[in-house]
Image (cartoon, rainbow, N blue to C red; front, top):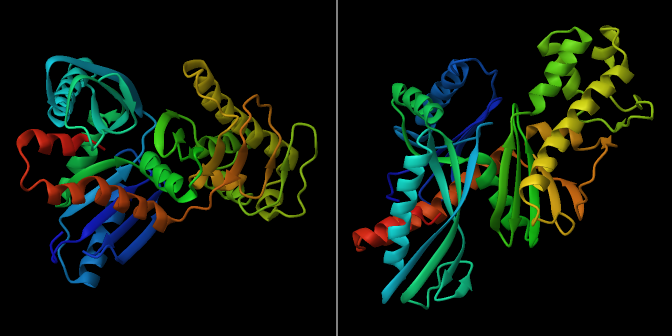
Length: 387
């Protein structure tokens, strides 16, 4: 990073915009977080972003052009793939890896043309029949090479639409990262537990991620999130979406027990909005509980169906995302057959979301950019995709 350059990060959430500017020493020099109501063309999002860019430029006395964008989508798509090379002569493993990356991109472009790759993650590799979790630094050449990848993709049309709108505001999107992946990776490293998982409950999607020794083992999204609880409250209790959201949020700071059998304890919740609407608290409890049950069922049943080798019994689960605030102090008694070692609420902050993008970018792009100056084309390609 030159002295004149800043790292500008925008987290493009469905219900919240987070914007941070970091200087060349990685110090945060500007930060803004705004709640936003989603509409069809995201005009509310881009209006807020435009206002915040102007505020930041005035405060730091510098023009902002390039940004790093993080976002999530209910259409997150993952691919697990293994590629192999058997050679007659020993060959540089970085060149082999580079060739495999070229082949990998060609295969994804050919068979999944509607998707764009955001992250290519090395899961494990086999070099001359020996197993490694990373490319070994003490081996230069090999005959046999097999590597297993995990790939995270978003739909091209969605990303092109977002990038086009940023270009209209004279902003260039340098990199796009999957928010739920990079922030859970950041938290996983901070927690320091060998096996941990994260349930990221967003606005209209829920993403479940599993790590083992800070290596991604599983990631999957379902198209149901916190907003679906709000819509259920609105529809069944015949109130507006805004009133339903206000009532739902009244439980975020409560100490309430949600159960199919027990009555709802209303002593520790703000019930003024509910009483004024003449709403049955027990009915409200059931509406919330049934949708929470659906989120849990769909998330973990799909995991059990498609990944029988993954065991949850030794895994600590952490709840993240604004939608998880409902679980902070409340107790939910749900029907579940998925036993974790522990279930915890992770109190993330807006600052941490932006910091996770900063750390991911610096570790995977900025440092490698400096070391790439004297590398050949194969080595540059290798560094570019080994995320």
